Image 1 (tube, helix red, strand yellow):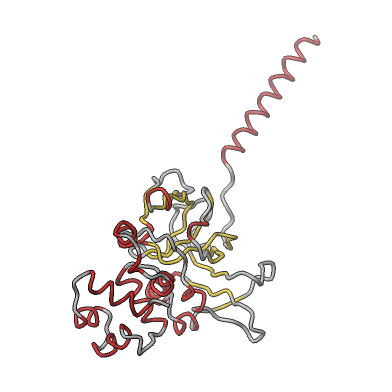
Image 2 (image 1 turned 90 degrees about the vertical axis):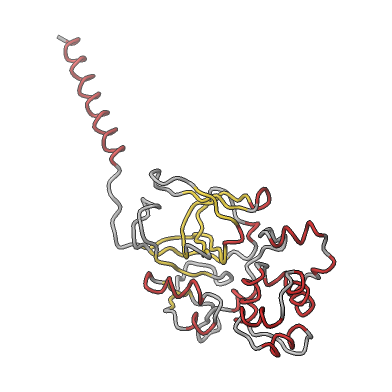
Length: 266
């Protein structure tokens, strides 16, 4: 494991003192010094702070020797292109199980979304979320449900509950499929994705509602990714007007044909 060497290397690379980094991470300087010397081991929340501060995935901070990377590779890491881009094991640990040690589905309602943006990696926060089960989903996968707002994903109604399957490796994001994404700036968003991570370190986000234009999201703005599996809503979808109009036109054509046939039979 390379965590101690990596955080010391990154601090010196940015010409920062231990006091400056400790202040930014809300740590005491001796505590930071202990981490850099391999004497102390950070908890999950502190690991998350280091990851966000340096903009590098936790897996990379722990498992990759940054000092042997080329300057180009280091620059790519710092710009947000992490070749080890994965939802870190930290997020897998921040979960809850039932009395049979099976994964719960945690529910993030609208009122809890702001707290989730900062508490998603905190096991204590995740523990207070309401939980439930969907028996038709696999017991071997991790799911979480989020309440969405707005009309950008119509015909999925406003205030629906969308359930997603945890995506550990963001390179596995499939084009033209829907995902729930936790972002640094915009919180929880629900969109159809184009994966451009390998090409230009970005995701292209599309709405189902054609009134909304697609836009780019740099991958270093992403905190979590969940692949859409289903949604629950108490709202009945509106009727399909296009089908209704088509049915009316077909019916009118039938009547016209019948009228013509009657005239020919006279």
